[in-house]
Image (cartoon, rainbow, N blue to C red; front, side, top):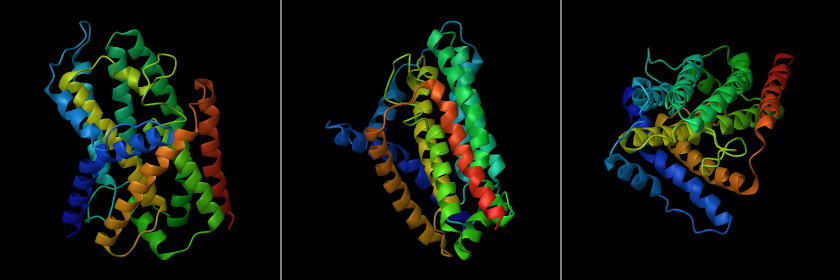
Length: 301
């Protein structure tokens, strides 16, 4: 039963990822006074892109061709390691450090593909994505420090079950939640860290690394992008959100949570502008500092 629930949960996350992306884009557009795309626009975009001819830059290598598949595989494996229902079958891999490695692996191959495209924008995007990663990873570790302190585990399922049965102070939880939110915005490449809607060379990060892609390779990158958006949201709620004894009840709660989070992200992106690139280290340092402070409050009793 646990195995079936986990597989169903991952299939649900994969299926609704483009829809969640569309919810955020639509909410943002409406709050900005624009009509915006349809909720299911991303499904149509991916399907249309998949049918187009695939071309590659003249001086690129096998790295450029393989990177979208590896990135998508890393995100799929990351989705499988998250106990969306709160519990996983015995022997099922669900370690936070493994999950962090998979997210870093996807980021690494995105940057590598940008460099291998032999284009100016690709190199620019790869440099920025790599720089962002060096700040995201320690900030994410700091944001999760409170979880390891109170539960004594680096595995996700025991952390989720621990929060289901034991109270946590409001202040440490709030600090950890804000820290996690800051880091996850950066990991998803959303405002105020990155703007997924722009192709301006002065501001784009992730978009610069996939600028040379088209056809099926671009479609794979788009699927990975939307799936990572959903995986990161689900991860945040599994770690800090309410978890009930019932697996199916948790799945229902997760569905409501990710939809509400998508709406909230649309509101955030309609109210805040992108920060300057050289302000990103301060942003990530603040996220890490809040996580460390929450850890200190818990460790000190």
